[in-house]
Image (cartoon, rainbow, N blue to C red; front, side, top):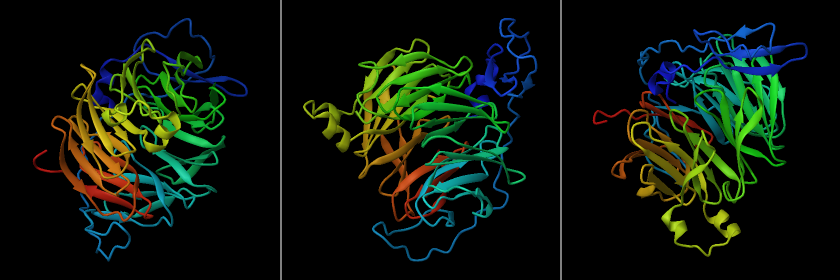
Length: 436
């Protein structure tokens, strides 16, 4: 959740590039602003709609309203204990599957759940701003556009909807195949999604111009737009990985066979400059891939799995898998979270295991804190944990859910963690500490 200004991407503006969308009557292009002249070879459109990719200066937003402490009633279930959260959002009536924070101010959250509902609400007091109505299946994907003006929600059946945040009005919808993942473009009002038929879709919102990227005849299980905004990496159920050129619509690199994974991909991540990609799979491997060459430059496996070489593929898939991964922004480190509860910290320069941190239950997701070597994990035991990746030491943990945590998000300044859970609730935890 790092801004362009933090990652330095804005300082190295690439040459003019466009993402072409084929409408009924014309070609509409999303254009990346550049002070230089356009590429004469790219004379595809007679009319051109400019989109301002320049990120506005982000102001530090304080908590002017203050925290609203909820009275804690008796908790029930197998995870009884204290509630460290500051705010609880309790309007969902079933498991809450996903959460995302608005990237511009980090004051709003959108959550989606098994109750076929999605809500946009305020972090400071949990007040509902509006419901993203109209879904008829579990809402598994939700997120704000790069400038926080739009919010998208997607359900398992493939119905995607987009709302204008300030007016609370629906401005676009589309029915794709069964939805696997969804992500906004980092600099433009462009939405990408992967579906069970193997397609990756790209729409310009709200006019709906569309491109599709045809994958193999199996689900596109995970995907991520690279920081340059021109490429995307997509992982598939058959273990293949494709790096797509979003403008041309063709795969630049395809990794399959021994280069790919031996099982469905579960997650992908990129480092800050987009030069490296990390992929994870149910085969328990995390592969480090050069985004430039498309070659695998490293393979990571947890020691607990590597010590069992005779484990069959089916048995291995059931017992363990890579669930989440990511790159540290300040040190050459990567973190991989496994279903067996192992958090592995790898040194990218030596490609060796640096630390192995054990959880009592499976890791659902991990996130790195921007500008530090602190990694956050959430797990099936309903606890958020903070780890110092330099030492492998547990810094602190936060409790309050009475069921497994299914997703979480971290504010840019690392002051807030927002979690969603099988207990039908979303919670806001204040995690800022004087010693960090």
